[in-house]
Image 1 (cartoon, rainbow, N blue to C red):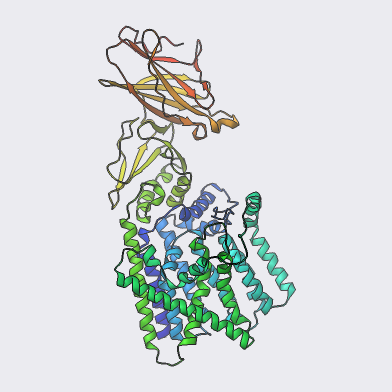
Image 2 (image 1 turned 90 degrees about the horizontal axis):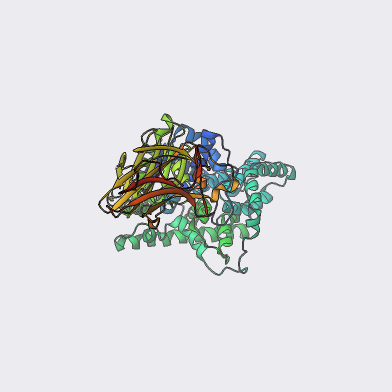
Length: 638
């Protein structure tokens, strides 16, 4: 009972350390993507056929998105989903303890599970909602399924073999690098179970479960064929082995994430890392020696489970080796720590000091993790929405999540030039499918809609939010973050965006000029035009269109004094019912005889739109005349 309570305490500590700095992690596109796919599946029935693109060019399976769908349906909150990820990793820690139950003494089990609970690299990877976070749990479950053979040398049952094939499909679909463990799995099943009928059934189950991933790879078969192979056959760099070791030992975590720290802490962290890496190495050599000398091939399999991905990635690939490629090696690496302890520590009952060492290392790692989280909160934010810490992401989600309940067709507008991944990030942050586009500019262009609210989202690393100049609107909601940066939401409800002068003149591209507002200053003129989209053209090349207002300020001889263009809206952003408010400023020599004409121009195609007047079509309208010209709106069209 005492040992069970101690294990439960370790698991509770592991969950607490995963939650302690959750507010500081960067809830970026990698974290949001599977949540966004799950939200689109729930809200709009859009079934993903492929998952997230990976750095090796192949897409992952959408399995994680489907697995998250029930949680997204119930929770719809990034904090809750990250907490769920922490719970699943703690479940993996419990499976790790069960794996060691027949192979190691209780104090070694406690030591190993405690280090896995506090391992900084494992905590860093496993408390997120991105794809690699699933590896520790699923790989540990896979190894637990093989426990009778890997740990005790016993024959596997048919049920365990079939379950192993199912878990093989699960690990392979999380991320393509999970497929590297199929080689150790093939060796394992060949050694332990020779029934080809059972393996045939298992392989059929594996293939059926792998269909989502295989379909995605088939769609990208051309890119798969272009993947470059290693530039040789002998490892030229130890980087992958270093990654595989540091997954367990925590090496370099202080330098990479938790700096600056006092040098004694960094020194102690590296000393601990060296000792643990020696344990892994000793466990690996000990298992191989036992497998060869005692003719127990199952003892060498654990080394292959841990080392095979490192061998593959140590080859001279023409791609960068990211550290998360080696996350699947974490469970087997933890088991090798226990194996190394069994070899170097006598099996006596007086190993109380081992608990003290484990607690000391765990506390040191806890300091590193807390320091990383503190640094993340204090790290200057660049203004990129996808770089927000989770705490700020949650505040943004609170500002947006109430709107789908009021209007499912609410629109969210992001600044022009935002990353193409940012709309997916917002959906994954809010947990609801929203109509999100990039296109507004606070000084030049704003959006509204005839029937639904429109929310403009703007962020900045310092200062104060600007007004939405085309409408002269201050932010509806302003969120100020710890470092002085801010998030601003400008909410435009139907009917709020109105011109001072109504016009109501349609064009031949489906736009309608509703009206305009002129703001005259001493030496400048602001022209704010309101354009409604009544119909979206069916032209398949509309994605390349880019209509923008042009303004001609002319003297009595028809010579152009000013000729500025509006900001413009690309064709792929057009939606029926949209209202585009375009603001253009120009120099205005007050007191002179001038007239202002306006039209719509597409610089990509070199064409003008035509205004559909009852008495014919024109491509330029006279909006206003000063000092000698008639000021009647509509006079002088041509």
